[in-house]
Image (cartoon, rainbow, N blue to C red; front, side):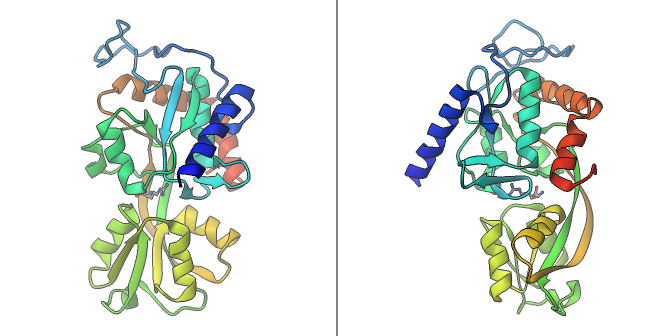
Length: 285
Ligand code: ARG
């Protein structure tokens, strides 16, 4: 583990020097931690004098925390050792607009991301297909939503399971720990045996091999994983939860949230968002 982490960090550093790697593709060379946004808010926690300034863990760099096993939003490219995905493109484009370089922390467990941002000092933002929820908003601020999402129940192809049959103690329903899928099971399948796990791919493998009867996971991830890796699995139900993904930022850094929102707004109007959506989903959403 140590080795692979340090190898990736090396690659990040090398990529930043070469200016060519995805993660170094933000194009900014600014060493300032001041926003160039036109924010009028004056409530900055930063020691800096400028009203719209925000703080950064590392000067000139947007440090990103994510759980990197959630394709097509974020996953490790085993060949390059770099994160890739929809969210990776979004945060790189945001960093680009802010004149910053992106750097990802090593892979984090999903249920540690909000606490990590709340605690501060390690990462400036977390983008990880994180659904904006009231509970999470008690701990962190979120950017404006950047994508709509729903949940899916995944089971073996030809399975006769339904929401009703799964709601039984003899049925194991797996999910990623701390996700909205986890919450959905607790609330809607109270009799089922809910199995929270760290990683999505082994969980789906467990559904494939019969260790679990079903998995509840974000619909776009279910679609992507079933198309690309799990042809023996099916989406047996789409659950219209009406979720929205947002970027988590510390409550102590309100001007960073403002700057990120401004960048997102620009990306929506200048076509950047459309092209990232088309790249990963084949069309705009
Ligand atoms: N949208 C869901 C949630 O916020 C799942 C997100 C999981 N993301 C990840 N990178 N593993 O709870």
